Image: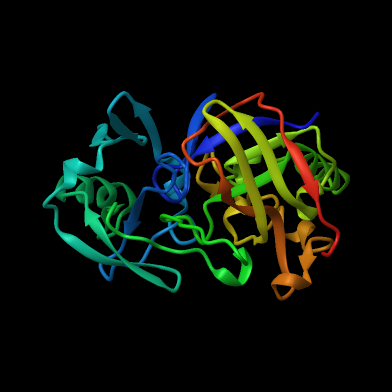
Length: 289
């Protein structure tokens, strides 16, 4: 039976992820996922698209704090409890076409990220008083909240999909790539390659309740999968892989021909439950794609 093989949380948007054995599910995705974001002087979000060294920034969840590490830097410590920022300056920040009010994480954090990335930047935290909605064009009859993820609370990918892509890369003499290139939240074992493309819902009997995730939109891929997450650089031997290979077979008319890999998902039921690696998953398929 299909099961969860990985659970990954990315506390700071576009920085390294944390693999967890178990994690609480909230209405806006996995707990602490994309709760923080780096912004430029204009309040616009900053990602590996322009600052690939963000891949080297490694957050760690430790009791009541988030510790942030990077090569050559002292450890930055942030409180997990958003109440610690009560009274912090509010900043208008922009994620793609959405502008929301966020909480400034302070001058120490701003200096840390500015020093490491070599640009005037600030770190912000999503405000508990703010709502940001996923596009109803794709969520249909359901509403969904999202924090600083690009557009949806969760990203789901099957192990077999990556195995198929790696087989295609190998046939071209290109090294295999790990799953972290695609930054998924849930990785599924025991489903066919690209079965997530035509999955409607995932049912999971989790600790604390029954979970239903609805897969709503193919995930268009930007250049980030070309960045080695261990080095923060592209491989000079094949700097445009895996994009070049995916362009041969992963163009999706539903998103204007964009190259897609993985499915964005929303929480249809079960917020507050705890997901764990090894949990069985029941996939309900659709065939309208």
